[in-house]
Image 1: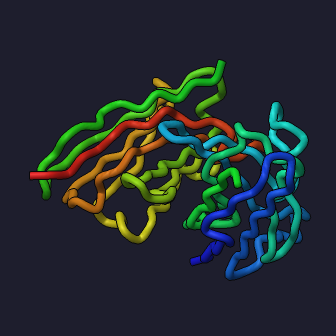
Image 2: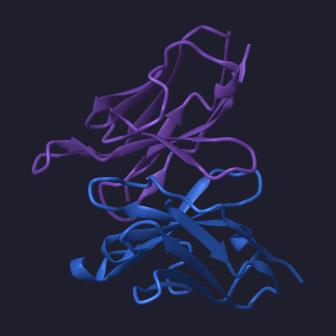
Length: 113
Length: 121
């Protein structure tokens, strides 16, 4: 099974500053037949279901602010929030969907410094 | 409007069974791969299992902690996904979400609000 490891577990960033979350997979999530990385990022606020932010590692979901961006390929991926806003306080998870079983990272708690 | 609505959660004794349902609307359920994801209180997200569309074989995969105890199924005639849970234990206590694993080129775009399952004597 593919293991997903996020870092850090928690992160405090000042408003307007950049937040960066890393996600590493135990094997490559790049599929050469489709030329895609099977990696998604989610945001979750208390009492709510996860919200899809990024899929195919770097494609922003419709309606997601452009301050959110995803990058990376293979086994190393990054979620970047370019200028933190108060409403971005949440838990963030990566997920691979390369094969079954899908697995999530353990989550990163993002707070305001 | 796309909607996924879970139901069937509740309090169940250890060793008991429960069946969750997820009613889908607003998209072509027949073509969708569907997953269940759970979240124990104060914990992270855990993928439970997935069922492919019948066109893609209709096969299921389940996570190791639930394999042999949980079964995912679907009824495309009424656009509904199921999770049959047997031999429940306290570690199965969680909010259970259904999600559209794959619909066309989109993945995990749609989620239900979740239903709480509590396993306790």
